[in-house]
Amino acid sequence: MSIQSSGLRLPPTITTTTTTTTTSKTSHPLLLRKQTKSIQMCLASSQTSSIQIVGGKSPNWYNNGDTYEGADGEIDWPDLDADLQYWTRLLRPVQWYPGHIAKTEKELKEQLKLMDVVIEVRDARIPLATGHPQMEAWIGNRKRILVLNREDMISTSDRNAWAHYFANQGTKVVFANGKLGMGAIKLGRLAKSMAVGVNVKRKSKGLLPRAVRAGIVGYPNVGKSSLINRLLKRRLCTAAPRPGVTRHLKWVHFGKDLELLDSPGIIPMRISDQTSAIKLAICDDIGERSYNVADVAAILVQMLMRIPTVGSKALYQRYKIIAEGPGHSGKIFIDKLALQMFNGDVHQASFRLLTDFRKGKFGWVALERPPKQ
Image (tube, rainbow, N blue to C red; front, side):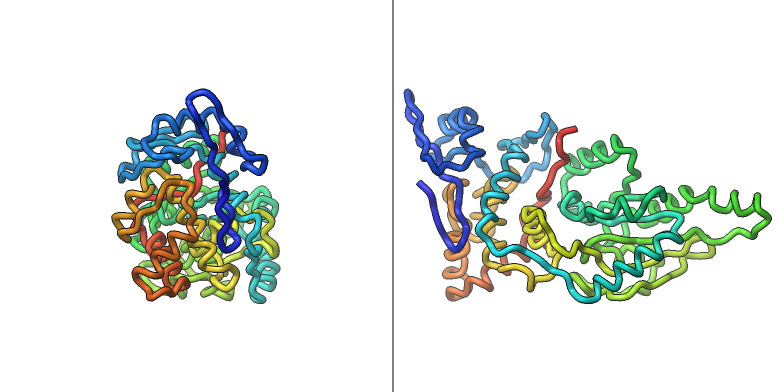
């Protein structure tokens, strides 16, 4: 049976018996592919859901290919990504490209030619979704440091998985918390050490040494300006918890040895991967005008229901609303939340749920894990 609500279509559940299994012709293709696995999990569950979802707070996940298991359940990340693509296919595309970005992109590409080191900042909850598809081409042969900001919002297991993934790619990674300054000093030292050869070459040519030039780039609202302010230990760059605050390139000096270029968030003119776009919206890394808040909140509920460290238990503890398994519509949950807390105002209910997630009220919750290598 399918549930159709406000543009969100959930994958139909698989009907099972002890001897036979039937599926609808319109069943979600992912569930067809994972039919055997789903049936086993159905029989093991006391509920009639197709995937076992149990609440819990333990972030102690381990890597088993693309499946990561916690103390209370497991999640298959490729399955979740495929479901996310299915859920978003009928929604209005999420697109956001403010006028200042086109001008900034052109200026930034020119400035990057002068850089000794490029520091790319991403959101640790969604490192893949916050990676610009053209960044590699812009950086070229320059040395790069990847900063995964908001490390306080993911588990130690998530952090270790991403550190291992990028280390295998030969990328230097620094985990940081721009609000508290964690990782800022390490980042400054690493930038200087990676560009030490610059002044060696200058000296061989009879030139005086100069400060290392490092450009800080990344998507909107991933914490670039906050990180610079922590490095400098004073507020020189405007920072706020919303996308699009920084609108101009700005050079700042970190002592005599390091110059930093703060830049506005750069995002593709058109986002072709709408699963990434939805993750950007959930994590507040894209302008709010680009998406329907109620649709995004409903999808977030459906994702949280599939993540063992959250699940229906955490949602009930937070809002005292029962979510009836992973087949439960996120739209229905939002409607219940609106009636219970906001006099039927769906927009306020949706915004509240997104804000709670962004503030870490559900614990350490990453929305991505490294792809299988």
